[in-house]
Image (tube, rainbow, N blue to C red; front, side, top):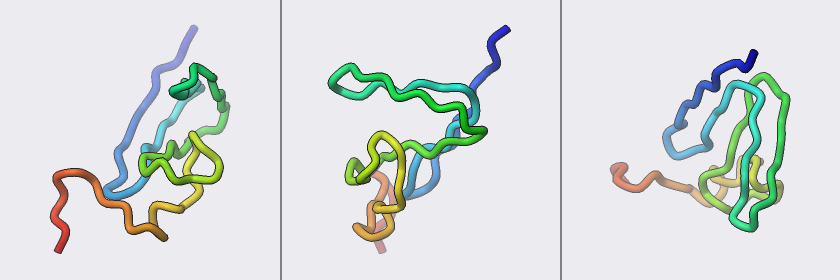
Length: 69
């Protein structure tokens, strides 16, 4: 029986995913994780892509459409 996957978008940060997932990168490689919650990079600058390593904070990543006060 497969379990569902829950997804949260962190403002100006990663996607948090709960569940047994695989992330397929642009070159077709699949990265699997069995962690209870995984953080998937959205800024594209993580040293451990496709996983988030916190670089979004250093580069001040901002969501498109968000206010940039």
